[in-house]
Length: 64
Image 1 (cartoon, rainbow, N blue to C red):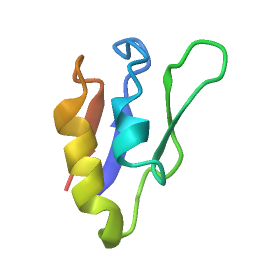
Image 2 (cartoon, rainbow, N blue to C red):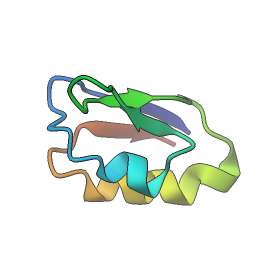
Image 3 (cartoon, rainbow, N blue to C red):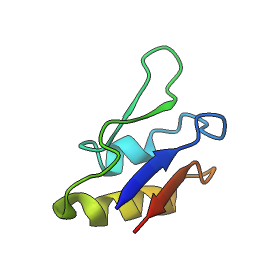
C-alpha cells in the first residue's frame, strides 16, 4: 500500500489522525495532514482504508 495526501484539499478535520495515528498526523500550526508512513505495514492497512474513507474532502489517496 502507498499512501499520499493532498495538502491543498485537506480541511484539517483530523479524522485520519484519529483513525490511523501510526500513519497520519497534523501540522501544529494549521491542522493539515502529515503522512508519517507512506508505505505502512499490513497491520495498519485496515485503519488507513478507514481513514481515507472518512476524510471529508477526499484528500487521502491509496494505491494497493
